[in-house]
Length: 316
Image (cartoon, rainbow, N blue to C red; front, top):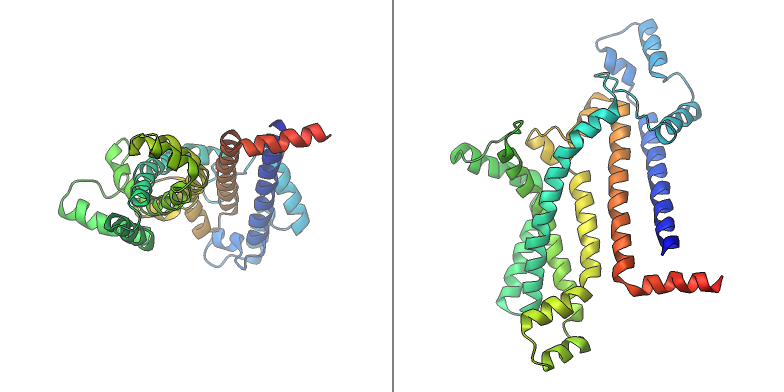
């Protein structure tokens, strides 16, 4: 089991390292000159060159890359924002709670509603309930998040005046609409995944045996079918949370939430390379940790994984 955990942690580190190299390379080959953008107007060649030297852009690709990787992985230093002069790490730490509130609450809704819909559809396979839930799931997954956000703002904020349209510090109602909009796609994905997983075990021998013993259908579903269908569902939950957090830029921009996604989008618009690089690495690390937890859940739920690594240890 220890070998399994170490292997997954090493894969996480390699993934984050590769993400750092990729985002740095993309920023380096970008046709835009951040020094000219930061100076604005029509700067003189001397001022432009001095700005490039101050930003470290006068060095070669390899020199910049080595310095960048050393700062990130040896000193945990993401640098300072070129626009605001604020350390990127401290800004990300301040913005992360807002992004996590939206992401985690949306994931709870995804689990409760999405998995519940999938189980209900699987139990009523081929009936009108099954078809209705699949139509709803298809509609949820087909509608863009930003369009849903705009429609809800028009209905609930402008016409009914029930909720604030934009983020306000200290007002919990500011999170209601972003959470709802972030959960639409996840509900649909979890419903389809839960239905598919349940249908794979619904005709299994152990389910037939449980029913032949006279157990209630609810106990058969919860005690026998659902535990054996959890592996694909857990995969969907982990990937769903990563997508919500990593793709939070759109929702945070629509509702003016100062989160990690909005910070990344601001950095892209202003060509603030430290902000973009730090945000991408931060999101890649978060997604990697979520998938690491999913893999660990696999190891605890699936005895075959334990047996595989135990066999490999005995073979040595």
